[in-house]
Image (cartoon, rainbow, N blue to C red; front, side, top):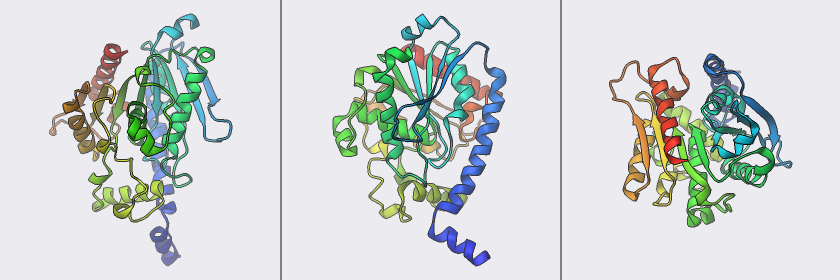
Amino acid sequence: MAVSLYIAFKVSPWPAALLIRYAFEQEAEKVNDSLEKHVPQGISQNLDIVYDPTDPDALLDIYYPAVAPAIYQSMAVIVWVHGGGWISGKKEHLRNYSKLLASKGYVVVAIDYSIAPEEKYPRPVIQTNEALKFLNDNSEELKLNFSSVFLAGDSGGAQIVAQNAAIISDATYAKLMGITPAIHTEQLSGMILYCGAYDIGQADFSGDFGGFLRTVLWAYSGTKDIEANASLKGASIIDFVGPEFPPSFISAGNGDPLLSHSRAFAKKLGPYGVTIDSLFFPMDYKPELPHEYQFNLDTDAAKIALDKSLDFLQNNK
């Protein structure tokens, strides 16, 4: 039995990926539940909308603020793509955070996408583009103001939406990815990017976190030899951004193992003249802020992050 398990972990990403998925989803459900006390009453919702009838994973939820429906179309739209290391997560984990954002005067869309190892890169990037196409095409019926859209994401979701932003804003990158952008540059008002992975070249496969990275990248790419893997071309979005990238709010906690990605991404965009609003804490900040710190609204840091995110949205819509 022990030998069989050892071999299974060596020849396939599935065993480790499923263990990680279980742990991540248990934590995500706790985080979502802990946010419930911060959510005001009166938020309307339209759940499990199918954005691609040929795809069983293509579902999205829409949350509307507690105002008259006639006002919805005057509000900017936030489309949030959940995290989970590309191998876990679902839109329901964003339910209470989405409601909280909606209560601040936004229509918020949370989308689902296919996760690995069941599906591989770049499937989630394609699905996000399909969701945007559906929302754009049906904006009148869904009461969406799709002339002012913010793409948002956390962790793996931040990486996915960053790729979509580049597809929308850079025709050369869109051609590289083989994806026709669903919306135009002028519709994309900005980005909210938390705790993302933007540079596969930064991956350090040593230690416990290195083992985690190797598992998720193996599962997502379909290839164990990540260093020699050409299939992830385009995923290191830091190599493909330029002056047309939209205004962006970028943040990560001081204890996040992916902090260097966010810092490097903000630094890369700055010289291009891209409007950047970043939130990084001193390295000696206590208590240390972990990956996805922004969802723990029982902490001062998360409250600051929410306030700064809302300021960014207000200034760019």
